[in-house]
Image (tube, helix red, strand yellow):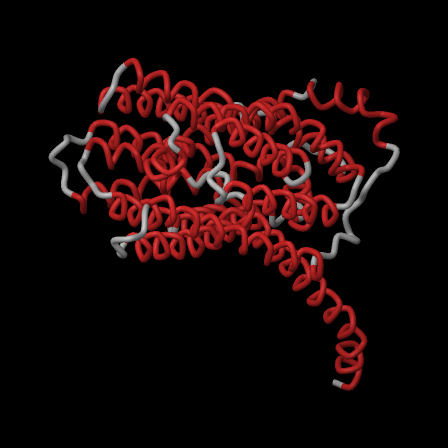
Length: 425
């Protein structure tokens, strides 16, 4: 018995160190989650306030779509160098720079500038989130997760980010409704207060990243530029990288469809701005549930199989949204929107775990993330233009139906891609 006790005492420091390392990994993940949850909602404010934005900034849907298409184009151009930067510099430096730049542009955005200035702001956001933030935060999570935690860590990233966004969006809706309740307050004034709230959240995230984020365990490779073309050629020659990128492309399109729910419900189902905002904010609360649950299921049931089933469910939900009759009640509309949110967030929660299939060393993982992002996030460029073109050519409900059904069809292609990804070497 004394020998067993002695062996236990000898092993105790190792167990303690292992537990401390485990907690540290989750703590680092938490900091990244807060940063990701704070930085993106301001860019996609249209998700909950599209009509109010159009009215406050005195712009058309085509002009707003042009802003998002420009930002999407910058995303596409910067994703690859973003991967190169993530391999060359530490994530903490890149993430902090992104938060500061995004928040500063947000203050300018709150001044309700002209359309020409909006183009500059959205371009800046494309750089601050696409070039310096995107690959850095994906890489640090992939390294923290190791091989056996890929599904759950990326599920926690997307779900936790969604939780932060849901809290902020709920606060935003409360601020917006509170200001509109006063007769002397306009929609423009309410939108300004919402934007300022998001800027404050980004400032808090920047302070946390500066003070608490520890990226000492992440490899950086200052000589990456010397072998960039060699490693790029290796990456783009891999079949599994392309299949995983197609999965992300199709899954991201399913998520993009939800950005139009706000305008669709308000225009075609005669719901008020506050009612629509409440429904779309409630949808955000599906993100933690969908993403985190799917991440854990993926590690147990198979990540690619789970991804395929989630995309199939999301496609069916979007088809339902497209085909609901105009007389559909608010409760049914809300239920379908929530189910669609659950499904699309499940897809988002797990599609980056496919990165682990591409067995690339950590020091070059940023490059793979860059390549997959260039392909996977192309919808940022063309979907705003497709959406605006369809709604101008086919005003009213029919334009939305064409848009949603087309995206649902792409989701089915994603299901097939996930199946092939399981079989790829």
